[in-house]
Image (cartoon, rainbow, N blue to C red; front, side):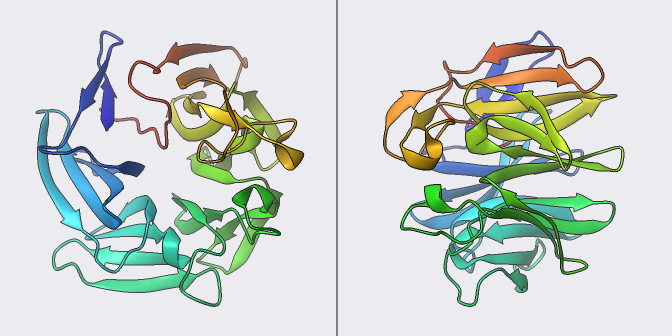
Length: 268
């Protein structure tokens, strides 16, 4: 489901015709339309909305992409994270042709769990959880931000990174289970749940997403587990509005719309 915050401050849900997407995982805009990556019945798609109309435009199938998790626009192409195959894939919107830009692991399967994409200062970046030490993604503690353009890791040792975002030449992201909105130099904001979804909205202001999570054992004892993990529910589903300049923030609950936020996009 896509929810739009109206000028009056209300959140208006927008759904595609028919059944709603099973899992929405990434937003991008070209200034007119909003593109939403989603999976349904184990197939990856991009839904396109004209949010100013508002109307649903089309759904674009991604037959070579497995478990799409993020997207960025690049001219006539859309670049997506094919998380189920550890690949970053470029898709031609005109004819659907695809080419693989990068594979994180040695085989086309989910071993690094790609979680986000960003065009930053003209360079394509990807976030990923990194390899698992055990059977659960809770044991993937060496997450990273990778610069596909240079082949350099910009940061490592991040716990389940999501939602990379640019602001005035600096890089920000969510360290999700710890509830942190972060830069490369430290935490900026703490949210009471699984931090995921980040966008700068003008000046030093930003909006950050917070999802209902789980309380787990071991590495999660001092934080929030991924919402898909077992355990007791913890945290809240909300959007935090804050500022880098004074560290003040406000919070708007979205629990009437759902339990999880994957991405946030500023439009208009």
